Image 1 (cartoon, rainbow, N blue to C red):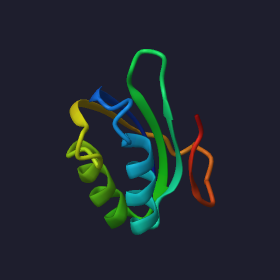
Image 2 (tube, one colour):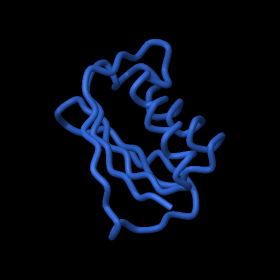
Image 3 (cartoon, rainbow, N blue to C red):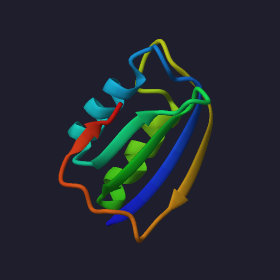
Image 4 (cartoon, one colour):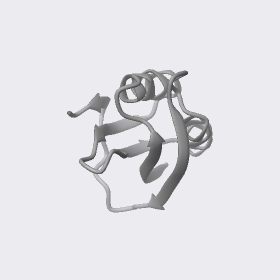
Length: 91
């Protein structure tokens, strides 16, 4: 199991990015949260199986929203992160 924090930059607010991220997470069995940040980025906390996490990260880099465009993703492993039981859009 992997616990990963991501900060996603680009055209990621106002384009359905968070809700499409939740759909992808639900498809892959990833748990966690996604939220908009004041600086225009999106933060994701994600928890899931290694193979599913690799797919999830790639789909985020490719932008799960057709109207979105990801220019940069900061990815950090965080073994101390909470183990979520579902995936939620938090704001």
